[in-house]
Length: 483
Image 1 (cartoon, rainbow, N blue to C red):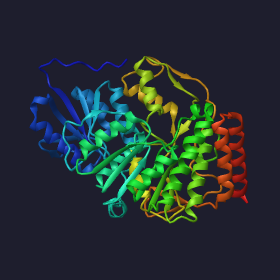
Image 2 (cartoon, rainbow, N blue to C red; image 1 turned 120 degrees about the vertical axis):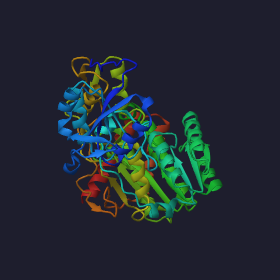
Image 3 (tube, helix red, strand yellow; image 1 turned 90 degrees about the horizontal axis):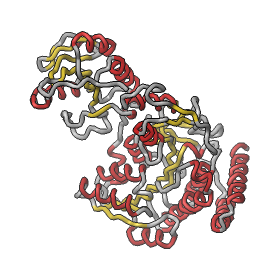
Image 4 (cartoon, one colour; image 1 turned 90 degrees about the vertical axis):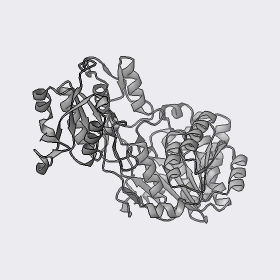
């Protein structure tokens, strides 16, 4: 295990600041204003040639990022603070690697998604996490368009207690809707997000609603009673291995639940409906993916005739969401390993929760009914690389302190996820990180008949028949799409 040297209590930590931009200079000023924090500023690092040897608040820029290793050694640095909020993941990874190699402690000022307001202070400085290594350029938000369809409106979020649903709630509360309805069937998760939002956004009218999307009667009651203007449908079962074992739950929650919410939105004239989908609905190989693909078909079928503007937003994995791989890896590291990776070549698309939620909210302001939007997920990430990075960020050496074990691909998993089928072509939208794909022509009558058959099989828990029906629906749909 890498041991960071302990300083005597009376000794100040010799500190190197990486980044001489606005963020770095603010941190310098904050440290100088609070000598009790115990930092001794030694110098600044910045790749801008014009800044080399310049002084900011009396602290000199003494080198570039490539010089960190030598500077740490020569000046006996105790702590490196990374202060480049807009830096890419590659830059953060390079700095972290030099710090690891120099056996020096390093921390980071939050990225642009975490910084609220226009000031940076020492309090949010934290350890570098895997999210920092995957940073991408900040999202440009068209606030006028978002305000136009959310501000002063009643907004309903299904699955509001889930990872994506709760983050959507946070982002939407910032826009100050007239009312936000937190709908979910898990009382603890709804209680928690309701409590958090009421403390953070006292000016917003927040209404928790315990209701499953499977309960069609209650769902219709909610739509009629509260008359939301906009619905974000995030309720879904998402765990691939579990849904391989329980396909009847895929039918109930992901398919019947979506049909219930969509039909109620249509019945009560909801203005706009945004459904959250997944890359696993593309070229499906598992029950969860097929159920989400059928859910997409439901939304598109209704978009043909409804007054409601229905749209779909499709994206990949979200870092830190419940049951995702990052919390699992961290748990395994805390126990001393092994960290389990399914396959050395396994890759996935990732984005942070705030990034995903902001793009979903933005997508809701684009296009027309029936549109499917795909979020720019960046480059796919190797799960093995992520495991090794997390082990190093935890202060250990992969394969030395913490073993990595390959356990094989689980049922229903693919080595590589995809965001588009061969038949789907993308077109640009007014937002550089959101792409639109061609809407499909779905036969409502055939679709409803198939769903009714699935419903009967799910009630009877006829799992083999459900899976057979899944593949039958998918095969017929793919054949039609390829014609």
